[in-house]
Amino acid sequence: MAFNILISDPLSEDGIYPLRQAEGFNIVIETNLSPEELGERIGEFDALLVRSQTQVTREIIEKGTRLKIIGRAGVGVDNIDLPAATERGIIVVNAPDGNTNSAAEHTVAMLMSLARNIPQAFHALKNQKWDRKAFIGVELKNKTLGVVGLGRIGAEVATRAKGQRMNVIAYDPFLTPEKAEKLGVQFGTIDEVIRAADFITVHTPLLKETRHLINKEAFEKMKDGVQIINCARGGIIDEDALYNAIVEGKVAGAALDVFEEEPFLDHKLLTLPQVIATPHLGASTVEAQEIVAVDVSYDVVSFLQGGVVKNP
Ligand code: NAD
Ligand code: MLT
Image (cartoon, rainbow, N blue to C red; front, side, top):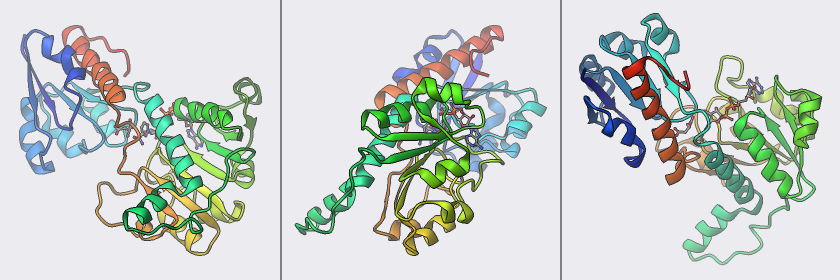
């Protein structure tokens, strides 16, 4: 039996070897399709593999008359219309833990860069300014890190922050005081976490319940001079509220890897010197990209050949 597979976002070539070696699999890699072009082509394919860029909308899914499985090479499935896929009986698989380590390391890199103004100082030096006064930072030791969402990545970040001798307080609806104790973190409600923290990092999925979880009211409850990190999903933090909180001096700095609209080339938050940012690079390591591509490729092969998947 032959299967047509479309890969519409850049995936690790080494990671897609399970697809390459499967008999009867025709692989098409087209990573620059417009939504219209994707809509015109999708009817030819049995499987679609994406990262976070391709928007797998209801319209695309409805045009995917042969489509049986959608593979998301990463964690977040917020770029896929899950109800539309379910209605059509199309299975959606992801790679839930292949990029956990990379995303946690990126979060820690952002935390440390934020505390010590490393990107701003580097930028000044590149522009021939030797300025030691403007870039005085703060230590992490004995500061409190608030972790909102203590899942795979949040827990890894918490462990590493403890290595920096930070106090960690976390909120997650599934966290119990016992589990918190086991992980060596303090247990708190969302209010307790955001009130206590010097640095706040969010690691929830983007859901109806978490959209703008960190909003104007939340910023008002925080300590003066708090610093914010978002390496999870744009939209968990209300960007307008963050902008105002920085301009008003409530928030001293923010490190952002993800944004409400991606990609973009200008963004008002980036006009603020207190904001450092990367273009959604949390999972962008050789290792993570290989693992997530291998995981979804295996699931696609296994599903099309035998109807079994590991990560539905
Ligand atoms: P996970 O499912 O392991 O953890 C998410 C946690 O959030 C869960 O423990 C869940 O209980 C908790 N949660 C849900 N609703 C909540 C709420 N209202 N308040 C507080 N906590 C809540 O997911 P993960 O693998 O740790 O990924 C976390 C986030 O990071 C996701 O949004 C994912 O898409 C994103 N991510 C980003 C990158 C990147 O490149 N920047 C890379 C990987 C993952
Ligand atoms: C994810 O949810 O896994 C991340 O957004 C990583 C990515 O695919 O870029």
